[in-house]
Length: 311
Image (cartoon, rainbow, N blue to C red; front, side, top):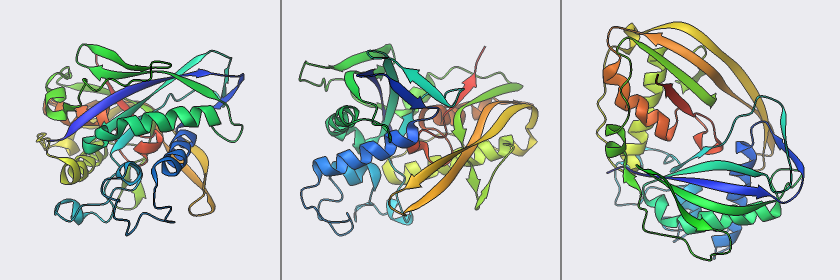
């Protein structure tokens, strides 16, 4: 059974500074570096071959290996990372932050990664103290809240020294049952952060409905093979749904990879797109998967966030 936990982190700025337009890249890289230094007890240069690689909080989140007894996960050269970052995507190049100002982001954990939430909380708190990005803008972790069907519930507050563990992750299948229905004939999808659809080695733009459905199906298959079954219907007929209005654009970002020692350009699609078809209701559960877990590449860096606009 595919289980999902969604957690909202609130950081308070400790000093004035500037946040980049999209700071998911810096957040993902920073917390990975801090977490590895925090939990690695062997000090090996790589996790390959480490006896703890199936249980240690760092590889479970950032470099997941398929255990020998999980045959389906072994079909993938690399298991998909079991987390999604949901980071605000700004309109300008930078955002000014004043001391005490609170910025929020969300961490969505899949499957067994939820068991390591205390480690991830400590790593994000430490990253805030050290500073985010090249300018080391420092934050204090004020609060963590867990999503429930009745709203977010506080599970941690700065100074308490405790983390509530009585708000468990929920089965994605049950969460999708509560998803609001979509219009039978018209559907508006808002790509809230850059959506990077790479299908058969080609980046897709513009995003036709068949592209979106295929990307969602590929993501769901990989997650189910590695982390548990969700049993979402696989509807047919996506190729008959047309793109009637497109207000999307392609945006690019530069990122330096310390592992590859190279500067990379990463891009994706943001904005809204309208699709029309005879009956779009069968696609609602699959679209709900995208709303919870994102679509396309680099969801662990904040890419791929999508929402269905329901009026």
